[in-house]
Image (tube, rainbow, N blue to C red; front, side, top):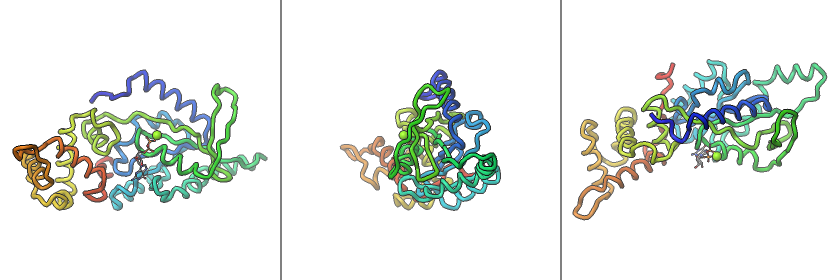
Length: 285
Ligand SMILES: Nc1nc2c(ncn2[C@@H]2O[C@H](COP(=O)(O)OP(=O)(O)O)[C@@H](O)[C@H]2O)c(=O)[nH]1
Ligand SMILES: [Mg+2]
């Protein structure tokens, strides 16, 4: 798979910037897409974060399979990483972020206070691949807040923080990380959820990946949506059946395959097959 849009030079630059920014914060918020908790990870996240603690936020939890997403929460927590399911759009659990950070940093905060330092706001930053919801989360956290600017030694640019309540500050620009492209299936999952642009992979292949995925994992929802019977060994027939049922037709009653592609991707991304998870935790342990 090609390293789409993310050239080696670009990655090196991002790496350097993120490592610089991380020095300024107490803890990192790693934002993942709850439909693809594995595939939405950056491949070198651990190297980027170094020793800083992190909290994982599984965003778009409203779109993901609720039972499967809870298994991921348990999985990450068993590895010692506190994890919250959130919905940055409607704010679900967003108010729990600060308390979670405090919990993770409890010892560090206690140590600072025992050394006579005044308690200060917890500083954090958001990291994540494109489209995972970084800006949406920042906007939500920032809704009733103000920006705090600060000059710090060793940092050339002025760093802006968004104050969130009394004792919580967020770096105003998120770290935008490159996604994994380490296997075809990861790339297809990024494409079908809309994490990477539609012109990057051949659209037919993305759609056929979706057919196969739904056939294997959510067959009832797939067949029910279009009122068809799916024979997965006959992809053309699936196209034809969807096209006929949904009126994706060209003059002469030929099937408009481009429209079937668009319709299917739209349905996939708008929960027309229900709440779906593409990465099941048992495949990654
Ligand atoms: N359903 C749902 N959509 C979300 C959520 N968070 C963000 N989005 C949508 O995901 C898309 C990408 O969000 P954005 O904040 O721009 O992602 P960024 O590239 O990481 O900054 C937008 O269309 C958002 O409305 C969420 O929790 N649930
Ligand atoms: Mg953004």
